Image (cartoon, rainbow, N blue to C red; front, side, top):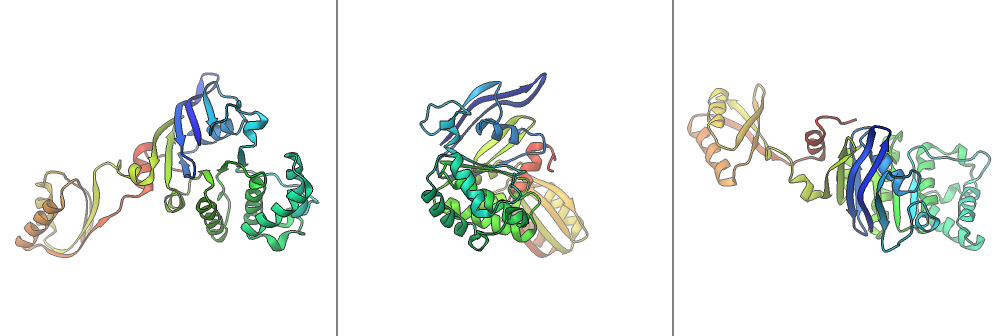
Amino acid sequence: MLYINDLIKNYGSFTAVNHLSLHIPEGDLFGFVGPNGAGKTTTIRIVCGLLRASGGTVRIGNTAAAVGSKEMKRLIGYVPDFFGVYDNLKVREYMDLYGSMYGMYSRDIAKLTDDLLELVNLSDKKEVYVDTLSRGMKQRLCVARALLHNPSLLILDEPSSGLDPRARVEMKELLKNLHSMGKTIVISSHILSELSEMCNSIGIMNQGRLLTAGRIEDVMKQIAGGNRMRIQIASGMETAQRILKEQAGVKIESVRENEILILSNCTDQAVNAFIGLMIQNQVILTGFYKEEGSLETLFMQLTGGGAQ
């Protein structure tokens, strides 16, 4: 669906996007993450034709149209971080305005407006003035507007920025619903827990470079140090630490009063062996469990702790 090849964007001597190559398949819900200044928004604006690249190519599907051309823009629905609304326009009039920009017939705009407002749960706001809506409602309205011309690719830049917890949940459910309908979606966000819950693929960017990209389950395998495990101990803490330090593939990450957190590349058999060894040496265990790797952990490892 979206093919980005060797994309470069320079501002004088500063390189905002550094030879970025990325393929997002049709039907994916792709999460684009990275610290502030990583180059995500710059990349998105180039794809949408709002910025001119210094080098590289962007293609959507099989179209040969140039980036920024009318043909290319018709393939994209874009929801920016800071969206524009108009005073003294009702929701219905707002949708009419954007539909007319795409040369759509009035009857088609009216029918699609009804369908899209129902999709984003704003059917009862059709005759309400846009500037009186809450931020969450305005954000959902912008999604409806971006879908009005039935784009092949929906791109959202920080759609949950500034939303309250309820509005974030509503936005997440809306995007998951669109994904289930087969829409290809690219979403830039700093709310990593939400991305890991709804995206099926992600890309992590830092200092203009794409560090990793792919299916979530494949990307998560890159977490350094192996599996994180918590061992809770009632007594024998010193003995437990000594045994763990003797194990190949085990690294003690932290020690608390009654808990040891380790990173382990051991097989299940090896884990069972050193747990058994602890018990044989009178270590009293009260709990032992493996933690699943998180997107936050991988993000911090790849970006050097540059989360925002």
